[in-house]
Length: 186
Image (cartoon, rainbow, N blue to C red; front, side, top):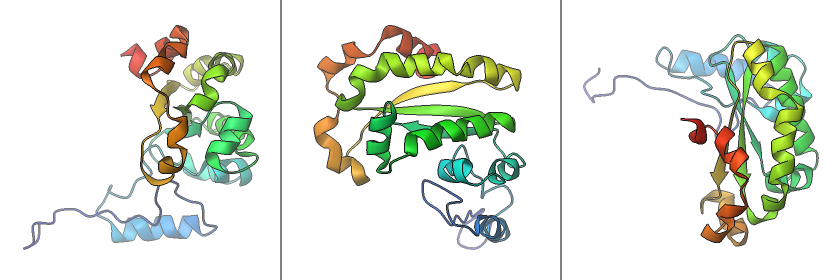
């Protein structure tokens, strides 16, 4: 601890999605050099865009900690592309899932639930089972997690306030889906 009371510092070259830039390995090294030991980690965040579009990225991140990666969805293909504001985002999220599993990293699916995707929840649940995500994570000695998130009025969330679920919408979430969610299994 120095005279100002700062014991540790962590420097990050990104916000919400690391490693998007092509020089991500150099930036990672710089973050390590500028930070206190162990303070510049990726937590459970990786670039899912890079996972889907850079074949060497998954192998590189497999050498880092942790062995989980959060992958965001807004429902099925049309709604995920809409929510992420990019055509092809849904397919990238599925490809990122596959690449993670191939290198021993567990995907942690986050579903932002909006009024737009309420009628797709059964299909999304079936996708989880069709991809055998629970079993495939067990095969790599990891645990598959899925959780539901709500839209909050911050950042781009202000722009989609009209799609935020209300209390009456909650009964449209299938009970089976709730039971497999991270918070539902604790």
